[in-house]
Image (cartoon, rainbow, N blue to C red; front, side, top):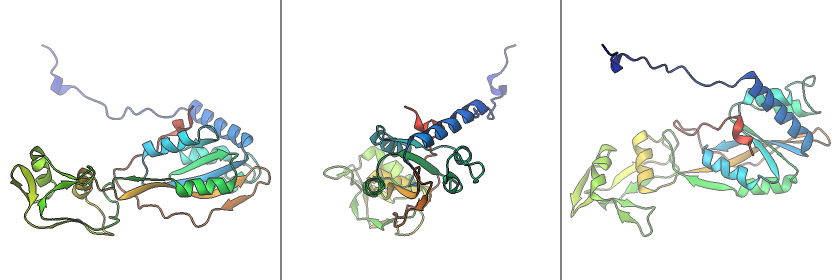
Length: 251
């Protein structure tokens, strides 16, 4: 008798782990770059999106090397104590690598780096748990998709989804509509899953991907300088992108 497919066991524990060889290669890569470049920066990201981080990498491809991997591996590569540091002063940098921190090696002068990252911003849709940056109220009448130019109403076949997400809609000449204004979200309040999905459907971008510089190490002197007056990052949210692992520095 053939074995029933229903009784088949599927393992959920087979997750590929980084080998010692891969971690060793990552450590060597970081140390080689510490020997090559004039400056090493630490940065953190607000509203993490891998696509936007790849854009940063692409724009800096010819003038920098970016690592965004496991903090423990990167800190070990640079050395967290004066005795272990790979180059003079790097331990002051390494001890600040905790959580989602990236490393940027470059020869570009500090003023230019600070100015570039201050200007780089990418609006994006909020995720569950983000704080609403503004109050959004949908007016009575047709429910509109604001990302269209000009804005256009939702098609009739999306009305069930709008109702499922909390809108008390009705059909008016084949268009999902509201009898009364509906406060979709309130400024400063955490977004629910339904609110975040509705904001995305109507085209309201509430968060901004941006990079905040933490500190800079200078190879010539071993000095580490903390970077002040950096932009405040959007609060963390559940369901956001996990930063890509050590492979972020490929190419």
